Length: 604
Image (cartoon, rainbow, N blue to C red; front, side):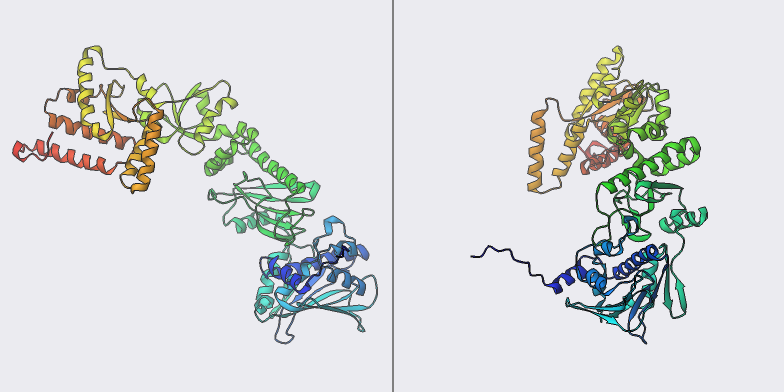
């Protein structure tokens, strides 16, 4: 058996099909590839004789039956056209044109094959600035090509001729060609002209995001980009890679699920409308437009290669945006206030990962407290000891019993608890404490000694009434005479209550799962998983209730106080709770109307 090395047998027709139909996302890119090739050729000619600088496109017409793109670039000799256009997957264009990296766009030598998405036959006619005869290269989608020298003397440069496929003719017609040329080549440093039925249309114009056209042009470009007037414009750059552009600060908060994205150009040619990896993810509050001379595109030239150069650019552009935020408080505090108000939620997420920014921006962020909404800077100045509730439920349960001399922060909103917990790292003079709902209840004073027996009796009678609701009753003195009571339950209790409610509306399978969870939780806890209704002995209704002898009136009053405490704490009512409320109200109305015992609608 022979062990000699053998050559792979490649089906060139299959390779052409793979490259031209599968590597690119859309047939639209055919014009981008042709424009890049033409721009490369023009850059190469400038190194030869300083000439060249224009691209002219003749869209498909009924008279000619073909699309033509012409450039006055360096052109190709017979040997060059054979090597460049017949060697698939090799970056031979660099060797032929001997271009420096900053002028080289078409790195893969396969861009021309994208034309097979719109045409089964590509014709290239060219004459080299280095001299020699004019040549014609004809390539077919079956993987064959021919090269011949022409007797006629063509102008220096190259023209590409495409006859449309039956299903892609629209992409070669005037309207589509003008749109595609403007999309991809609007800011190229060469003149691009499209021949339209009504006359020539100039495509290229100054690039506002590169500082061309003045500040008004930059602002107008931003309005077109984001659909609103930007809050501010940030110049960003990384000179080492020739990367620069602008970041427009959004005047609105972007949707939370939208990733940071940048309109990306390479050598002023559009690479992608929404490149996701050019700026750090935390720069959610800007939409940037960036051009680079040296970053590497992927083979399809629709995204960037994730390499060390891109990582460095991302860090440096991010540093420029961070610097803008840091300087905003010194140069435009009113703008900083507006900026924080619009993007506060995202900034709270950001400062958890950026200590430098956190030290500056945290003081401008706000939190909800028992004294209203307060900036964190004011909070740490007024209160050396800050207490916070981890959840909204905990905050609502105990906010009414916090002394006026203290402050309680609602940490239940996204990022707020972590933000408060991190305050001592930024302000060492401040201490932070997370509250425990049960401990807060234990801090309350019991009723006066003379009233202790009546209060204990009230606890026992009321607990018996609410036993079916899974709620115990305690009596405490709260320094708010208008408050009848509080519904108090720590997070574990609330979760247990939610599971019990869910079991009531689910089938046997999920009910069994939730029962096992309850059993496991119960085995892990020694205390009773029940909520508590804390009645305020300082309230006149509660003290009066202790002396009510009529068990019907007492029971219905306790039930209504329980429902009132649930609603005051923003707790959802279960079906049983709503039934209890309706029944209690109806029965109290019946009692007040003097209905006799025989007609009384309930039993005690």
